[in-house]
Amino acid sequence: MSTVATFAIVTNALFLQKGPHPAPIFAARPLLQKEATVPPRLPGTQSHLGSDLAAQARIQMIANIQRELNRKGFYDGPSDGIWGSKTDAAVRDFLQAAGLKVNPEANENLLRAISNYAAKPAAAAPSPTATDPIAKLIAPSKRIVAIQRALADFGYGQIKTTGVYDPETRSAIEKFERDHRLPVTGQISDRLVRELAAMTGRPLE
Image (cartoon, rainbow, N blue to C red):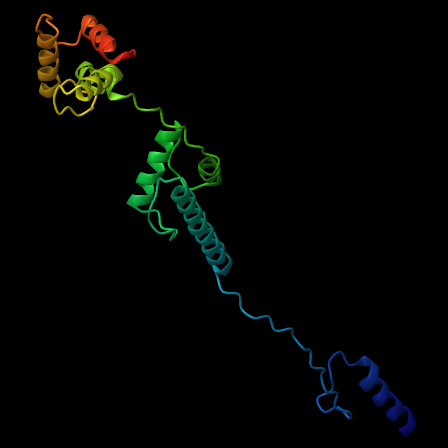
């Protein structure tokens, strides 16, 4: 009977109990599970990094635009990457000179346009004698130079060969006309030129 009772107690303790024995013979130490520690992620880190990169790219773009504007003669300030009033005015001057109708914004298209810009050669300024009739009249003349030289060579006054009809030249012509019994006019005429050429023995023109 004692053997049967002992067997029933052991069977009940080992197989028929749903929960652990209040005082187990062999205490089982629970296995410690290692949990992976993940560092906490700061909110907004990636967004701040992206905005910093965009700001640096814009500063570099503006500096490149300033450098190209300086090379083309539209800007004389520092290439500091700051879009100030001076840079804005330089960009607008370039757009006007290039005939471009776009907004003055710092981008790759603007930088490429400035780099490829070639200034048109300035038109040659017209000479004063071509537009001013008074300047044309007082401009040096080869004919007057020849007359002044001939009159000076033959002693008709201290005349400077300037090519400009001045009072000294008029006085010398009048003296020559009186000596050669010509109408005293003091003016340069074809007859005066012929008489001077005959006196010098060479054509004056």
